[in-house]
Image (cartoon, rainbow, N blue to C red; front, side):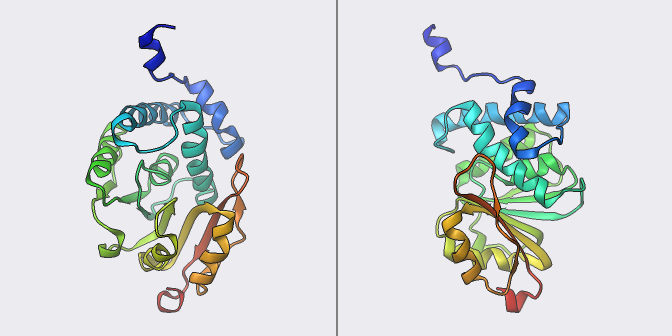
Amino acid sequence: MTPQSATRPIELDQKRIAELLTPFIGPASLSDLQLSSIQVYLELLLKWNAKLNLTAIRDPEEAIARHFGESLFAARQLFPTGPSRDTAIDIGSGAGFPGLPLKLWNSSLELTLIESNQRKATFLREVIRALDFDSASVTAARAETVSLRGDLVTFRAVERFQQILPVACNLVRQGGRIAILIGEAQVGLAQKTLPGVQWQTPIPIPLSRNGRLLIGEVIHLKQSC
C-alpha cells in the first residue's frame, strides 16, 4: 500500500452501499440517483471531516451504516407510503443526520436544517448544493431563537437533551410529529419531559444494541409542550 492509498478514502460502489443499507430499509430499493447522491454526500463528509470533525466515525462503511442507515431507517418509518410534501425541521444537524437522508428518501420534503455552528452550516449548504436539493435550506442559529413551525421535527445526538425537548416540541405544528434517534436510556426521560406528546412504542434501530427511534404526535401545542 502506498502512502497515497493509505490516506485516500475508500470508495464504495453503489452495490456495496445498497448492501450496507439493506438491514435498515429492508426490501425497499434505492434508485441509482439516490445511491449516487449518497456517494457524493459520503465523499464530502469524509473530506470535510478531516478538518471540521463532523463525526468520530472515519470508516466509510461504518459511516454508511451508522449515519445513512439509521437516518434512512427513520425515513422509512416516517414516510412508509412514499413522498409527501411535509415540512421538516432538523435540530442541531451537524453533519446533516437525520435531516438530509430524510430528503434523500422523500424528495418532496421541505427541509430546514438548524445548525448554530457556522462552519458546519457551511458544510450543510455545500451538501445541499452538491445534491441539487430544492426546498432545502440551512438556518445558522440556535433552535431556541427560531420561529419556524414544521409538520415534523427531528434530532439526533444533541447536547442538552432534556432542555432541547420542549424547544423541539414548540417547533412542531399542531398535529405534527417529533422523531428522535436516541439511546434506550433516554426514552423514559423524553416521555417524562413531554407527557402531553402521544408517544409511539420505541422502535429498535437495526444493528444497534440500545438505539431507539421514538416518534410522537403533538395533538395540542399548549398541553403537549
